[in-house]
Image (cartoon, rainbow, N blue to C red; front, side):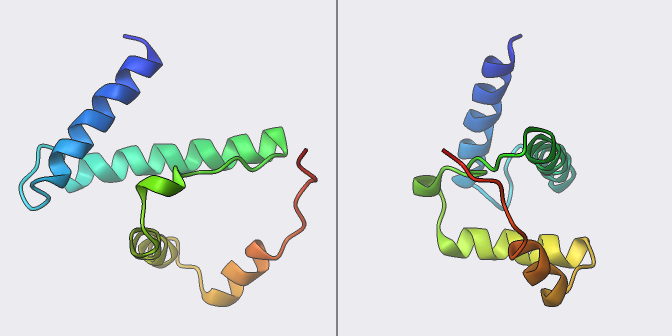
Length: 96
């Protein structure tokens, strides 16, 4: 199965779970595994390619969605707001 087909299948499964978030097909462990792989891949690509493409489709998430996930990621990674502000303020390469 191609990567595009796998992505489409996961998106379909995830969107189905949005209709029944308390009892969907994806377990918390499944979701953590997918998010962990996606976050690691995004971070490595940014570092290697020296570019920062949009990590989300802005029209598909709310500010609350992002704040909820980021807050939990900060806790899991044992970061604090000072650490986060240092990373956020770092220089980024010029993007055309």
